[in-house]
Amino acid sequence: MDTTMNVLVTGGAGYIGSHTCIELLNNNYGIIVMDNYSNSSPEALRAVEKITGKTFPIYECDMLDYEGFEKIFQENKIDAVIHFAGLKAVGESVGKPLEYYHNNLTGTINLLRLMKAYGVKKLVFSSSATVYGMNNTVPFQEDMPLSTTNPYGTTKLMIETILKDLCFAEKDWKVALLRYFNPIGAHQSGLIGENPNGIPNNLMPYIMKVAIGKLPCLSVYGNDYPTPDGTGVRDYIHVCDLATGHLKALEKLDSIAGAQAYNLGTGKGSSVLDVVHAFERASGTKVNYQFAPRRPGDIAECYADVSKAKRELGWEAKLNLDEMCRDSWNFIKNQK
Ligand code: WQD
Image (cartoon, rainbow, N blue to C red; front, side, top):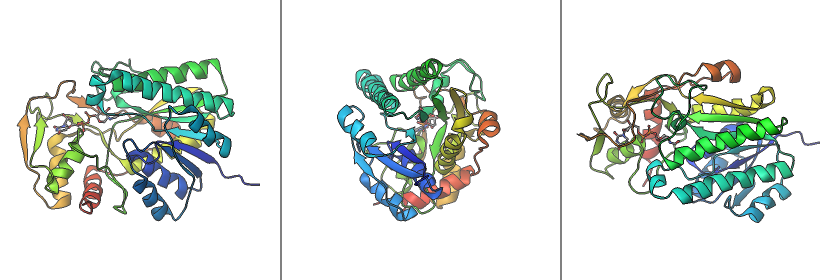
């Protein structure tokens, strides 16, 4: 009898999803990947197969296609779900609220309806530190008041609320809400990583494109924040540490009461200039930058209290900023 635990990974071709797939396969889970490739490519899944030497079912399917989504549940034994799929650009969400609410909320409700119909009650959800809003003091703790300032963040907060209500109503659900801080870095193979098309919104992909000459200069958004060097401070976490955080959450799901939130960060803050200098050390290349006005909606400091994940999941991040930059450079220098 096959006792392998099979995990459906929605959005499994994405940056964090693909790194998590590697971690799952290397720990003898079975995986089924569903992705609509709206912000990813099948290339990433071919790299996952190459890195792990394992194959797995892949469905090109949109969460909003209920019939197509149900086919995945009909054709596979699914024991748990890790749910990454969703639109995730903060700035874009401000101009396209309806698209974000429809895709992220309806898509997630479709998933939950199917999980219920097929008796799958274990879920790890990709949430975000953005739910801590602008009024909390660092380090952020899971039981702090939550608020959001953009439709993307609001979809994450709404989905957390839906999951908490579902777990209150139906006691057999086990849900981990993983609040990511700032994921950067890449798998040591250099075969997968973050390389968004066009002009990146996030800091590290922008630095990477400047380092390989695809963009001329990094704008540092604000150098007048109340921080050590005046630039914004964030909790950067290696994407591979984030992946192991998902594995630990999956392993501990049975001991989790209802829906529980966990911060996945390092607990350390690094400024924009810290990241620039670490990347220059790792790559041996100069990163041109200029100071620019603050970006609307940015907060000065954002970093995690990571004690709950350490205590309850037995997880903590292991890689430091220099190692994150080393692996980011190792990935981007191979990209065309
Ligand atoms: C980091 C720092 C910027 C770009 C976002 C989302 C969050 C999560 C992670 C999904 C800030 C500065 C950036 C640039 C810069 N995503 N910066 N020049 O805003 O902390 O978080 O990504 O869940 O929801 O909000 O990440 O990488 O955009 O910014 O100076 O060209 O880098 O001001 O201080 P952020 P970021």
